Image 1 (cartoon, rainbow, N blue to C red):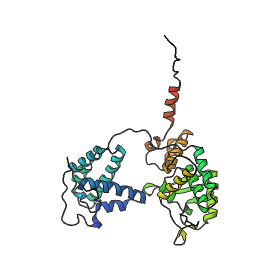
Image 2 (cartoon, rainbow, N blue to C red):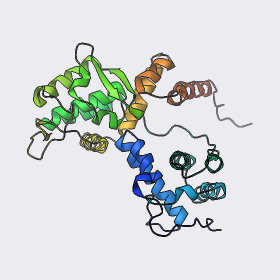
Image 3 (cartoon, helix red, strand yellow):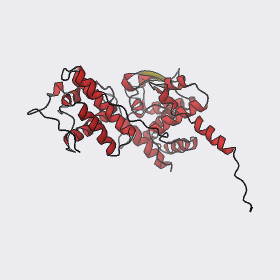
Image 4 (cartoon, rainbow, N blue to C red):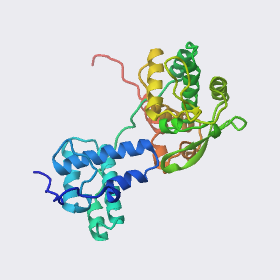
Length: 324
């Protein structure tokens, strides 16, 4: 069964300035969020049109009705997309429909009906990997063996990742002005431009200070790209900003040099939260440190229930082998 046809107006469906697709993406404060949601909407456009090369720009989102959106949800599930992946696309769909309503292109009733899609219920074990201290130590040793500016930068970056649990985009967005050495703190701008304070261990501060001795104290990005010949890249006379993907690439390279399995910046985030909860830090404090909007999100990183279940099983002794 194909998706019910969505009629197109002659010529461009929506002028760019009033395109809900563009308006929604422009409302997102994070470049990484814009990239993620753009991908979701482009994939949804392929479902609408049946054209795998279709993009979301200019599509008649305002013409979608409940029978269309419920079919789109069913198609995503039929294609074997994971529940979490489907739900992310449903978020993007609801938001672009809301922008169409805000722009006066849909009635409130049509918007509410089209957006009234339940999320796909699911229960999954936590994804990702724990990063053991010895793996972090091996990666830092790989950085220490590199006497170029990149060695000092990467060691400081790994130390900040491990001791703050920041997202990769948050690390990339840090500036020198966000660093307070006296308080051992960093001011972080998270999702939806929410600011929070995170704190560094004394060892992380030492790593960061060694990097700043190389970088200098000029205003600009705290961590900047470094050219092939060891020169710091600047923009308008200031250290340039790197991307979240660059942070992930640095981590991947240092893990490979350490002979360790690949780890992601989010694995460092998972590890940080798990270590806090294991140490008895209350959930509200852990939530504030990592910038989660809900304590339920932070609670999913808690490794203690799994450990207690394993310890309960350990109390059972398998009977010795003996003939009857």
